Image (cartoon, rainbow, N blue to C red):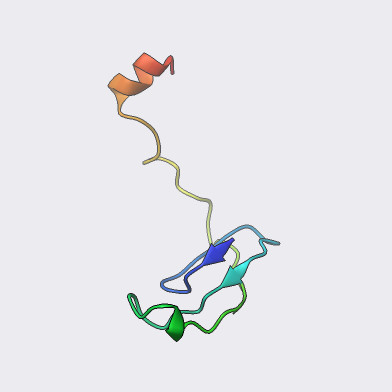
Length: 63
């Protein structure tokens, strides 16, 4: 995984990657401080309730 370093990120234990460690949005790569990705384990189960197509599209897709 490659992450810009802005905001927060949670992933499953063992996720590996690289972070650009940007200090602010729009600063550009010259402001990056790249390093190994350190990701916190999720504090709770992921809420998937808002994921999916609208009902009419789900019906057309056979869901």
